[in-house]
Image 1 (cartoon, one colour):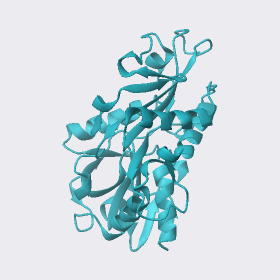
Image 2 (tube, rainbow, N blue to C red):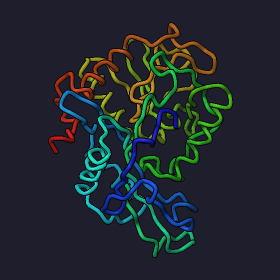
Image 3 (cartoon, rainbow, N blue to C red):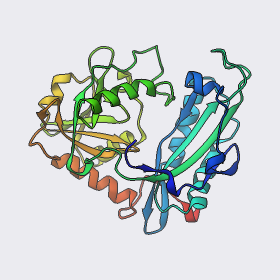
Image 4 (tube, one colour):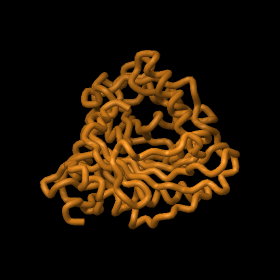
Amino acid sequence: MAGINFKGTEQIWFDGKMVPFEKAQVHVLSHVVHYGSSIFEGARCYDTPRGPAVFRLKDHSKRIYNGCKIYRIEVPFTKQQIDDAVVEVVKVNGFRSAYLRPIVFRGYGGLGVNPAGCPVHVVVAACEMGDYLAGAANGVKVQVSSWTRMAPNTFPAMAKSGANYMNSQLIKMEAIANGFVEGIALDAFGYVCEGSGENIFLVKDGKVFTPPVGASILVGITRDSIIKLIKESELELVERNIAREELYIADEVFFTGSAAEVTPIVEIDHIGIGEGKPGPVTMQLKEKFFAIINGESPDKWNWLTYVNEY
């Protein structure tokens, strides 16, 4: 993952206590190692004039619990305890800004597919992070992947599980091997779905379009934030199935995500998008988003949790 640097990480929250980075370990026969049985989050902490602030902390905790409910994982800590742990790892490691990784996973207890008897562990880590996608400021060049997202009723797309990201790896590795920064996956019916780790929006004739929840997307927290900003800006938002070819003739296309934030897409499959540079709607939304997360504009949705005031 581009832009991540664990050098400044000294302590990790592991099952209720801080442990040194090098001692945060699991057994090689843990269920998660063999079957991908984990639910995780990727969140951001931003440097603001009031100190470090975690973006939409409670929403991330809620989503991790929802994913665990779908996968029948009993979390041994409350949402509040996980929120507290996120804030604590930022404080203990002295970060002003950070990428945050809470994860719930099944440990060592049995090697069969049935996870009965495997303990459930909870870890929260924080690390430094720059741009997730290389060249994001000027817009990225991507491809439509040959790999599709999982079909409905195969894997639950609404759960941010480790197993789902084997599909994401295929999409990402193929894109990089072909000289692109990222891939865009289609769903099982051939409609536009999302990137390997990002939601997607396109702009056409003054309207903003994005795939619906039923298109096997992860219901992104940054996606939801941008939708709120779109509506506040009095732009028309349309959630519907999007044909692949609509990407090529769009005026603008952009990714959203906790890691990717708001990233313009300037080329897809070697076809220039719009004028081949970040478009005005994308940049307007990006500027509004960053003004809030950097503490420069009023946070009327209470998205920020200030670490020093927690």
